[in-house]
Image (cartoon, rainbow, N blue to C red; front, top):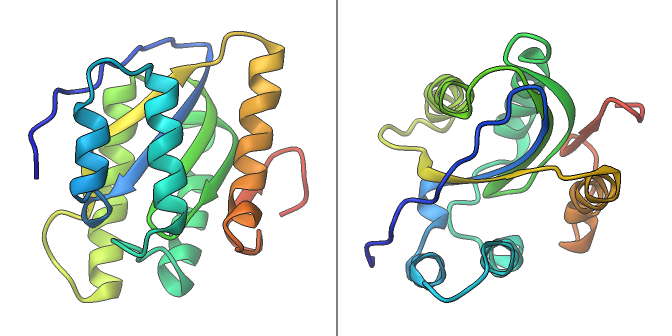
Length: 174
């Protein structure tokens, strides 16, 4: 795999954030190549990666028992780690929309470390489960919020997956 520079992260406590993080094994040569492209807008880079991951089987462990666990776990952090708005759990990555109440570093450390231990236990695996990097974008305004919310809600159906167990929204019944 090619080496790529770390993505810059923007803490914006009290503001809405859109986060994407992936399983470690989903970051293959194609994803690494896109991440290393210097002359590409970050939103286009993320769109290319998400489109690829929606159809990739690499690192696709988030189904069945692991899906159920992660769904419950992400909801359990509401009001302690963040104010949760919605999420979708795809087979190899997760999209989250929340209001930030802790630093992104602490938020991601807690989400990744606790969930990795449990998911590895369920899968009878060990080692690194989540990729080190994650994508974050501060929500600029109501139009951006709606666009991101709709993206999260429509991500699983766009990839041919049911929303059942994959999608959560504080605005819609679970």
